[in-house]
Every structure is written in structure tokens, then in C-alpha cells.
Image: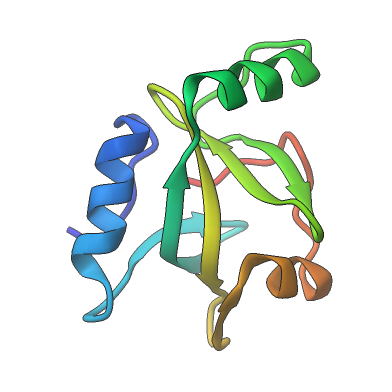
Length: 113
């Protein structure tokens, strides 16, 4: 129930994350590690088009389209892109995405399952 499926829309993922916060948190797998998502935002249409234009290719579902320790983490969904605002690594503490990315390398093109 708590596993995020990127085959759903950005709004459905946002609702799942908020619905499971603070009880258990929604999660996705990244390199066989469970990553919990505590707070996400759905990008509007203009922000989505801008990010997709920067990629110069069609992103697959769950693919990281932008990862920057100053700008955040953006992931492609079935319809739209989510911006991850608060995250928790496996056996780690809950933190803002910029702090998380300073200590954990996530590359553009990698995928969350």
C-alpha cells in the first residue's frame, strides 16, 4: 500500500505521500534501498515543459530528470513530474532534499522503482 508506483499520475503520488504522512510514509526503491518520501510537490505544466526540454529526450517512468543539491530532485511520473521536498534514506533520518543530496549522489537518468 505504501509503495509508490510511477505508473500513476503526479497528483496520485502526491496524495499517497500526504495520506501516509506521518504514519508510515510512502516509499520507492532506489538501487535496492527503500527511500521514503515525506513531502512532494507537483510541477505545473510550464515547469514540466521546461525540465523536459532540458533533457532533450523522453524520460521513462520513475526516471530522475533533475538532481541538484541546490535545486532539488525531480522525478518523471505517468502524467507530470514531482519535486521531492523531504526524503529519508534507508536507515537514515528524515531531511530536506537539498541536505539529502549533499550526502547522497543521485544522477539524472537513474530510476526509482
